Length: 422
Ligand SMILES: Cc1cc2nc3c(=O)[nH]c(=O)nc-3n(C[C@H](O)[C@H](O)[C@H](O)COP(=O)(O)OP(=O)(O)OC[C@H]3O[C@@H](n4cnc5c(N)ncnc54)[C@H](O)[C@@H]3O)c2cc1C
Image (cartoon, rainbow, N blue to C red):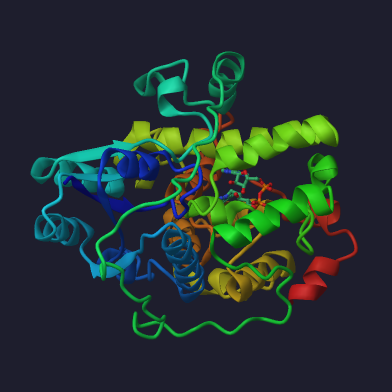
């Protein structure tokens, strides 16, 4: 009898999950495990907690949903807290496993974990984070261009999105392997109160992800006009809001892509349907940039190695983080983030530009605060976008400084968004 450990990471689904399907197919028994890593409950170099209560709540909901999906196919999920590498080695040995399977990661700490595990165990790390498979890129990862368009053009011409992987119909797991879900309080955080102003009731898990997909594409056909609405700020219909589910893998980029293809066949194919795929490509790009550049994406000098901005003291950082800068557009966006764990893409660009170029505060503090607060936190997209605006990432123009007055005029001309959140 062959038994394997399956480590769920940012792939909290059983549909279109190549690694999980492989583990089930190649083994008689599979032991699904998720680890709430001790690191996530620590503070970073700036003294900012790494995981805030809203993201943890979303994660626990996602795990509850995953556990439910697994139980439906005869399996279960064990959830433990600890040092991921240590817990995995111990569990692997305790259950006499033949192999540890998991989705391969692209960001630095996670790839380091893979190296450590592979030194001690038989491992199989399977790619699955992105729309385009790593092996299908028309370039080696070392040759990945530092400019998005130079990546996008050849990918669009030469690469194809792979078909979906079906969920296993059944999976055998030893009786009693599953464990209960901890509460936020048991993990040392307080359950956040739901803010009545929140425009979108984000709930974790594949089920909620597919409900949102159904709503955005099929019930409301909002995709038809996405390119014109995507810079919106108020409400929840202006953009897909898929990011929290994509970030922890409750839904895959491929699942969204193949629904867009269907939409193009049955509803309409236009610049908006293309644009959502284009944005998913940005997500891919930041994941590949992280894979190529390792630790560098987390350094102040980023992938350029330059430190062009004269950084000032961070003593006013709290004003920015708490939405007390007295610049009402900045404050409104930060209030939304603090109340809901979400902020529009337009808002993120503006508050990031303000912190970097107006307040001259180290961009990594802003990125760290987003890491704590965003329910869609993704190391690659977060640090990639922050570095881009700071001019140490992949922006061919060397950074973005937004004129706040002009942004207000263009995106909130009547001040409705500011009135709503201030
Ligand atoms: C400073 C800053 C920090 C950010 N941090 C994160 C983060 O931690 N996690 C995260 O998922 N996104 C991040 N983004 C990217 C983007 O703001 C969000 O993905 C987007 O706002 C999510 O809303 P949506 O799902 O409605 O996006 P849509 O406009 O509907 O786009 C669809 C999907 O495409 C992807 N996408 C869109 N824009 C980008 C982008 N600029 N970069 C990478 N992927 C993109 C996302 O997965 C998104 O869900 C950040 C952007 C900035 C400027």
